[in-house]
Length: 117
Image 1 (spheres, rainbow, N blue to C red):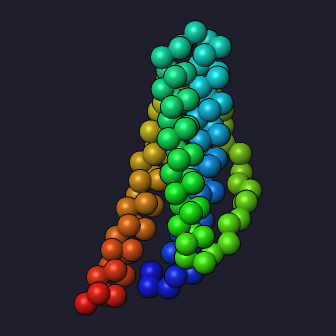
Image 2: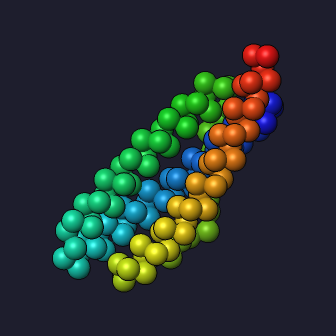
């Protein structure tokens, strides 16, 4: 990933997907609150806020690299009424997302090592 444009592209991917995940978690938080699951609602409200903080950091990095931010659309996610179903689905999304981020980080580390050695 030695190409700055590839890094920007990867960061934009994270911005797009993590923004949508934050919106989903905020919606799920409201659903859980309406069902009386106040602790679960608060957990997902905080999770959404944390994701938004990461999105801002990724956007700032794109701008630092001279890239342009994009507001990309993405196919909608399923919203759940059943908390257990949602937690199972969210876990799968998190696992898959972590693999994507791990690949991005490994590529970035390799590029950095090549750059300094």
